[in-house]
Amino acid sequence: MKDTNQRTNRLSFAVFFFVIIIVIGFVTLSKPDFEYQASIEETLEYVLSYDDEMSPEEAEEIIWEQTAGFKFVDLRNPYEFIKGHVENAINIPGKSILMDENIAFFDQMSQDSITLVLYAYDQTAANGPWMILKQMGYNNVKILLGGYGYYSGETYDMLSESEIPQYLIEEPKLNFAELMENLSSGTLDMNANMEQPEVVIPTRKKKKTVIEGGC
Image (cartoon, rainbow, N blue to C red; front, side, top):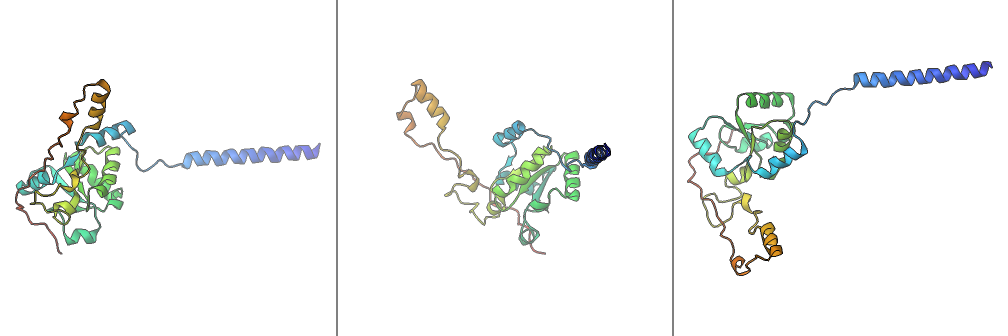
């Protein structure tokens, strides 16, 4: 009888100790530093709307005319930033956008209704930071199409009309969804779709600004 009581006491103590650990875990469990404000559906709408894309031509116009309400954010590393950057841009490397001082900056820009134009060397490298900030509720961020490589002329001759701009390379030449719909409904005119659609290549004004760089 004594052994039974001892085993019961040990079991009770173990259960009590386990419950205490669980309670302490819930009490000390910290909330995540950042929470997404946008749902998956809302984020998908952002991606498909193209409203947050800024062409290099528009960016150049903003810089040349010193249009108020815009700030360019260079997401490259400090070394690349020093070598050259968009005029009056600030450097926030992509991997550090969630640091406290940078979050404070994003908060202030949002409160002041300043549109932030994010760019890296190419457009793809800016997609991730843009999406993170949009999901966190910052609706004042855009992406510079083509990135700094295009804007600075390193990957594309900005004054040439003989090439398709980098940010239009993946644009579809045909609306395949419309073609399939017409085909299924029997209204597709094959002769009308034999001609290749005209590729519209945006022209660019002669560069008036000097890319900042150096120490």
